[in-house]
Image 1 (cartoon, rainbow, N blue to C red):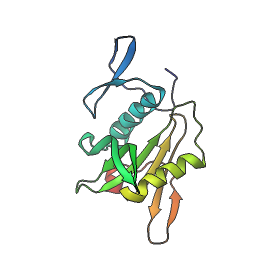
Image 2: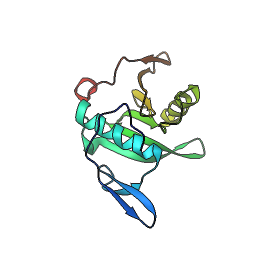
Image 3: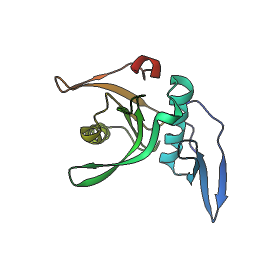
Length: 150
């Protein structure tokens, strides 16, 4: 897989029926290894190991509704009270992050109502905070640690 701008981690890979699978520590199962999954797994480990987000408060590919449409968020992190804290949208390293990416995560957040939004393609990572009082987004220099947001 393509090298990313994220720290390496120890991962488990298996091949079965001509497909490659990667073990997901959150879902506790092997999942098909796609370019987006490669980014998602690296980013999850990054959040856990460097920013101290507890594994137990992270959900991957959580289903939710936006109007009448069913949507799936790549990563949602909750606080200890069970309220959505951060929504992360992961893209393949081959995809550029653009206004559509930011719009996508903001759209998901209309129903989730997280305080922080992040997007990554494994090479570039952006995080911003939502101010619901004046409907503004403020980009952050880096991802806040769990201790700083909780």
